[in-house]
Length: 86
Image (cartoon, rainbow, N blue to C red; front, side, top):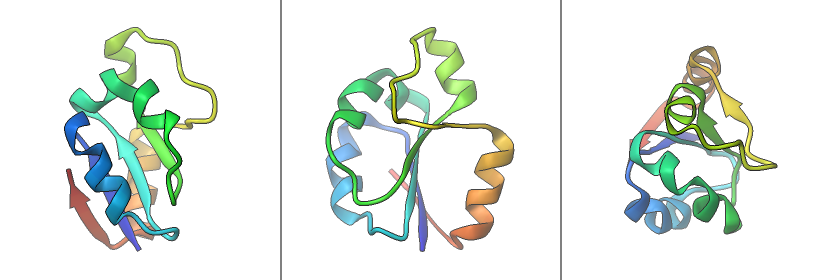
């Protein structure tokens, strides 16, 4: 079980290819600007968008992509002992 943090939108395809059903992905930093494109493709695991980074963009939330607060991020980190940054 891995927690993937997707920072760079160009790495979304690599992240999606490596992600497994028991993993989770948090879209953050620069990748939040491409959230609509990232979320439009099917993922093998749940994806979330980091609340603080989403607020900076001013973009509305895409339906079906839950917002992860810092507390959610911490809980996901505990539940997914491996971390992979993209």
